[in-house]
Length: 84
Image (tube, helix red, strand yellow):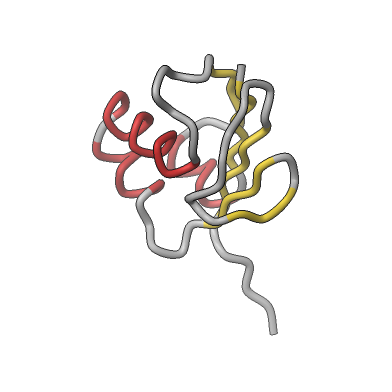
């Protein structure tokens, strides 16, 4: 099972803060997980998870969307952090 966590604006747009998801067959990278979620859940998910500035962490480490996934991973999605 993957633990998916959604933060800040991502959480607000999707209406979900976290969920558990069985690692889908053929999904071995973050980008494949995003494609799976978009295909299963539709347009709102596409707009949020395909945003060019989406940040992703796997097991609390920032990664790019080509990062590998394994059963048991925590995957967090959040918007870019801004500061001044």
